[in-house]
Image 1 (cartoon, one colour):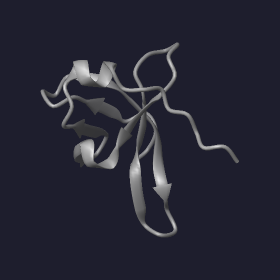
Image 2: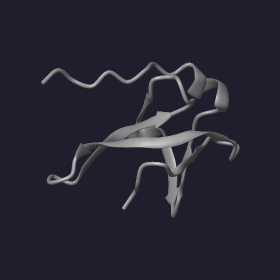
Image 3: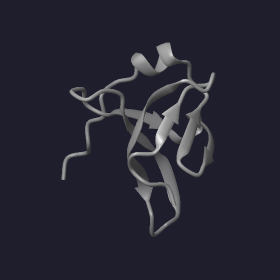
Image 4: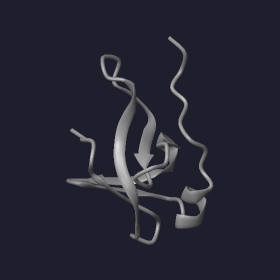
Length: 80
């Protein structure tokens, strides 16, 4: 089980943020992606599932560089 607050690292292993939320449908076992907090004041950004390289206890590694993570768009939840 992945939990908020886990460390998120870039493709080189450098910390780029912490896990904010896992997106998808838990009941249908669908993993769509993650939102990660990259700073204290910034909005979380969306990372598609296909950009997640590896998940281990307490750590999520992306296949993105730190610069690519900085260019991700802020996550906007869907309208209810």
